[in-house]
Image (cartoon, rainbow, N blue to C red; front, side, top):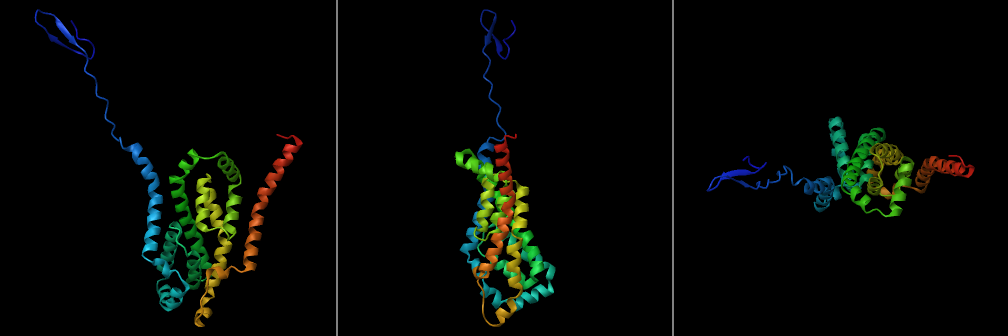
Length: 275
């Protein structure tokens, strides 16, 4: 007698064959059983690294170097280093700026002003535009990777509507948030990540939106020599005079014109019954 499929056959006293039931097969071992458990950790890793970097920065007291007094007291040495190693100094400044923005270190305005003093307003503006955009993008990607899936899974209806409205005019809204100096830079880096803004729109709106403010701070920095010679210093908040704030708000209003036009156009189409 042939054994049952998957079973085994042994002889028994008196002749004949005893069919044994098949042995239960052991399920194949998952080569990466820790994958599902590891995925959330990997998703949070970039944001955790940035948070740890910020904590380390604050714990070591490095923020005290981002001050007018530090720049004033070390201006001779800094200017000499820039003059002797201009390319290295420019790349180093940009790298420091990228890290500062990615870690959300307070003092970005002071860094921009310092760059204007060391490199001049035009080169400083170019360096800051590139570095700030890269640093903001790193934080945006880290936040989107870690938090966006969690927020979308528990999103309330009002958040879903807000996300849909923001995404339809994401470039204009983000441009306004960048232009108006009332919103902290780190907040404007995080909010679009939660609302599903695309990477391309985020980077383009950031690069364009920070041009006016960056140029203002860089221009102030390029004229610091006479202020330092008199022994005085500056405050980043004091640079934003009412005239400058009004000008930036005016640019933000202009950025909202396309949004207002599209809303008016859609309302007109609904009123006329057009599809």
